[in-house]
Image 1 (spheres, helix red, strand yellow):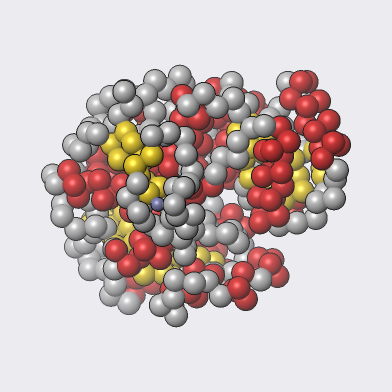
Image 2: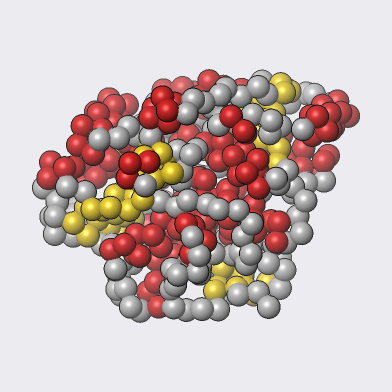
Length: 418
Ligand SMILES: [Zn+2]
């Protein structure tokens, strides 16, 4: 028997098939995992797999998790007494060995293992960059076939670890992230491989919730505040859902951590909607031309999980949360500030969260004794590049107008040559 079931957050229906993305009654609601064990455990194995609240049974590969530690230097600069950092990336001298340098690696590991255990033969993944790298890495590490779809404009910021280069990658020449999701759906039906499902995939959200499990394991309690930069919002929702499991456990606190979420201005549709206290995103705030003006393209998701039942809006309401808009110059300042204090490089998206913390301290949204968890969603890229080397992606180029038959031929050839 499975150690979990999944349930619709809106109507409460419990689904028998644990590889479902939708409730048949409600298309506007997320499903959530209910684990039979209500008490948290972190002694089941190694790395990621030592936690009991993951939708996998028999993981077939090793997977590193986050490094959570108490900050001294950045904490001093900010005047905070209990600042904890969840570092997700490459920093071997501190024991951090997430080779793709992004927390999306947990999402990929859990989603792939969950798919395999559900008899799925392969997955189609659409991504603006770091999710693609994470899935490519786990695919080659675990011999599970995937096809990646990315917008061409994101290729410049993409890199793979050496062993991931052979993973078929389709670059869409005439479109953005939203168009690459459409293309992924099309390829999914042509190749008869399911689309990974984005935020609707419970395994992805629970995988990202690992950050909170590691933090509670280290700190011994739930944090009062949680800071993260958001693109789709998948990670923040995963952390909120995980926090609710800890509340039900009862041993780690009785108050949900307040979510402090941030985006890079001027492309900050969730920040703008939240400012209006609205569940609806203004279509004008999703204008693709705004994406060219931000320095963190991984946060440029035009289909964020904000409005959906159980999404970012509900997470903010439930946790008395806040959103922060961060300017490009502040992103660069925060990258420098973090590296100078903590001694490791971080990606621009992570710096967006750092600056949100700076703003929260300045506006007294947090107190100096509060237990704060800062999610550094990616870091150590420069160190990894220097020590290991990285590789550029060699994609198959297609356009929105490429006929289905041609697509199928290109992809079959690519999968065969592997
Ligand atoms: Zn439902």
